[in-house]
Image 1 (cartoon, rainbow, N blue to C red):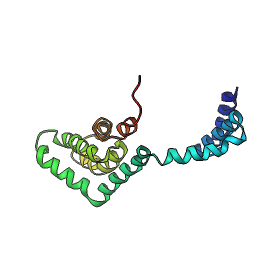
Image 2 (tube, rainbow, N blue to C red; image 1 turned 60 degrees about the vertical axis):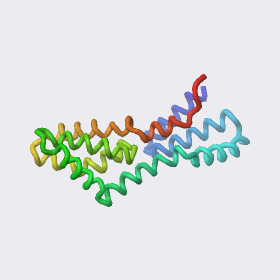
Image 3 (cartoon, rainbow, N blue to C red; image 1 turned 45 degrees about the horizontal axis):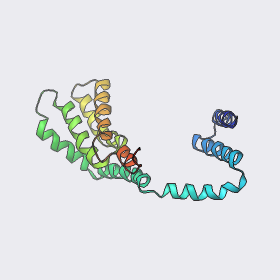
Amino acid sequence: MILLYTTIALITLILINVPIAVAIGVTSMAGFLLTSGPDAFYDMVIKLYSGSTSFPLIAIPLFILAGNLMNTSGISLRLINFVTALIGFIRGGLGMVNIGVSMVFAEISGSAVADVAATGTVLIPEMKRRGYSRTLAAAITSSSASLAIIIPPSIPMILYGPLPKPR
């Protein structure tokens, strides 16, 4: 029954344009209060603090920061020039350059979002200029950026790494 009430409260808060993060926080605290009582709020503060200071969770914004630093400092443009020198002369080479840059960038940043933000701003306009369609350029960029999940060190691998082994 509590799950029903919290779900209704969450949907109501979202429908009246409360930010989603605030709506989730308010409904989860209300559900926590209903199930555990008011004395459990002291434990909740300690659990929130200990959860936010764990190493794997701190690594996520740092990976995204690394991707943004690479983009603003020009490393991603140098990386694009390097991969273009390797395979850019082949027919359809700019699509292959996009994939190669995403592979190298994924090794450094570990984030698909940072990968798209850093390489997509340079490669998608260049692909459109060289005759690729907008949809093909976006599809190649988003598909190649998803390599960041597979190539270590990726954010999912950092989150799954500290989990205990199943028995």
